[in-house]
Length: 250
Image 1 (tube, rainbow, N blue to C red):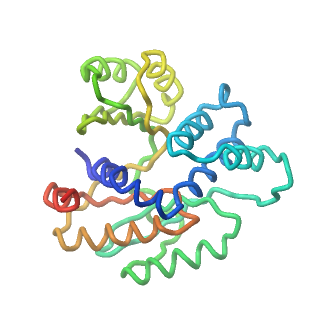
Image 2: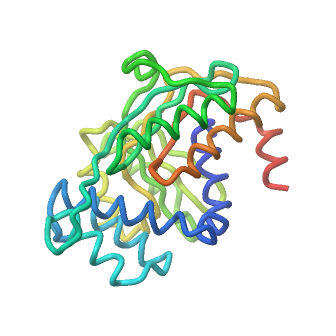
């Protein structure tokens, strides 16, 4: 299993902690707003919005909060905050490359928070383009793998143009080129698979392996970045060893 998928596993397992902090509602609201702004407020015609709404409801997000987020995205109502989606680049401890996806209404606050957090961890911000070339943007899906035939999922995904299909416990992860995202999502839904996560992410072209101690330093840096209100996702080129994963699970 790739380092990114291992980090996704870790994030799923700490999701309850995030919910207690109240941060998950903030992230979900921003995702709903950006999805509605991108393709409208009708979830039947906006796949990104439909997924965001399903995730919000599964996390018991209040209906009025969901409605406000949709209205903000479509320009309806009195909420005048204007969010924008921005990608920043940087380096974490030991020179690990980072792509940091943010949604914010205040660029100055966001960049200040990112600089402070990276510097505290021994990293730094990077010029645009100096890190991104080390990653490939692609589509991803995570589906509920319980009582699901892996071979059937693999065959369906491969026929739709997927590049990789991996099983991790009760979750099946699918990686695919950006251009097959819509077709693959439609095929998965038609087959009645439960899509837990879907979207675009940055996958490193080559991963860097560190010692267990240094890996933990980078992961602490990533978690500190993800704790910032304006940060939606963080991607790195770090390989996570089975040793580190086992220690976190324990």
